[in-house]
Length: 364
Image (tube, rainbow, N blue to C red; front, side, top):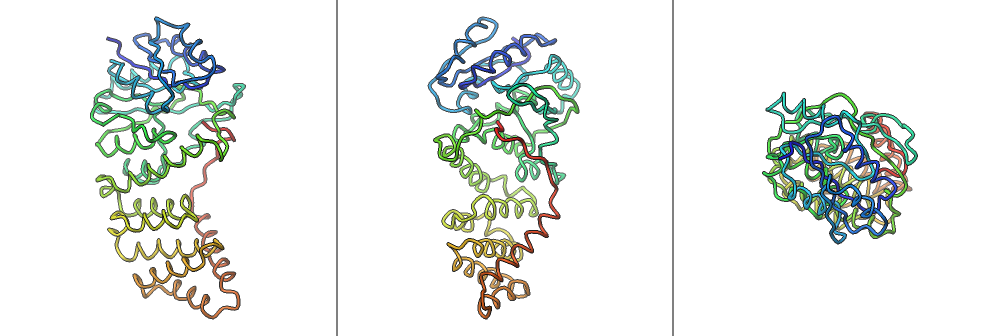
């Protein structure tokens, strides 16, 4: 039995999969097996991958998404350690050797993750992956993963098999595009210990083929998976173990940024136990910012006023909320006033946020 299982889900990456597979074959550490699942590619991805049999295990399936393909690969694998390599990325020659060395020397660690080198479609270096990832702001691993999705399990992480076997799936197949993040939350909630190895072990490629237009079927499915992932986390038992500050930040980000203008989904979130379980001051604060956000949207001024009224009922002592409501009642242009105030407070929030670089257009 090989010590390391390298799992790959491949879909329409004929331009890159050869480099990805050969980066595994050229590893200085050779006690590995590689399972490549072709997820219904319509280009030459499958033909190229087959050329490497029997050194790799090649499997074909109808297109069901990356999480499904990775589950298939995982259940056909046997290694003590598991690494996922995207079919458009590739390893540095020492990657597996350094990861195995670390895991063998740290029996109490379930996951080790590293850095990566970001490249474009031509292989040009764009910087380190760590420069583009959010910096964890919480001491709790669960808090950090839930709020900022800062741990990448694809390409730069090695996991103990038993950690994955404790989870259903292990990937949730509805999470197309967010399978890494959702799995990381469940691993964190299960008590896994994670450590960082401070060196790059793979090349992380960004290219246009990984960016779908907003009207595409994939983009719509990704949006649905995004919403499903957030609701799944909010309804999970482990969300109660997330610190109050992290719960509030998660809910604010979801309601104000990701569900802006989506009144029905906002209402669903507000009616969840995860929201009602917060104390009155925290709920009032979230409803205040949500009300201001709704006022900025010309389609929801009445809803904005309703949210502000809700906020004031929960915290009658909030002078800021009272002031805005007074302006809405007596101002010559109350919406303009509300928008000015909202922009002011948003600017204050933005100044306090930790800035991170954005990946170039075409992020995978």
